[in-house]
Image (cartoon, rainbow, N blue to C red; front, side):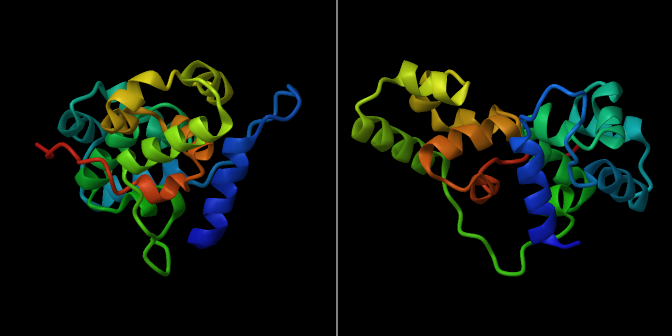
Length: 178
């Protein structure tokens, strides 16, 4: 599978809201990518966690559960980990970089579009927050805080703004690896 297929797989998993039958959505094999990238550098899980500045258990879960990269850690942490592991965030999430570079949408643009949509629809921040499942007021005040969301949250906010969430992934600045 390539970028397009794995991106579609991620979208299906992130959109999963089927019956509560205990089935888990299938995410791309992100855990395996974390493992391979770490092993290629000859690092232990504890060493990666130390460079990341987190407890080892936070990193271990990333190598055991494909969904962790999408629904637990922040986008900025993903970018930091990609830098530590010396791979792109697109490689970690989708197995490869897109064949053509994607446009970049800034967080400020996401907020601008979100505000324009609220104005056009005549709805309040609280109403838009209810529809996204995220309290949007802090992001309207400081768009950079969008990098603190996990992928599934960023996706919901971007969807409300009419923005492709993947085009925002170049925004966060990774903390330097120790």
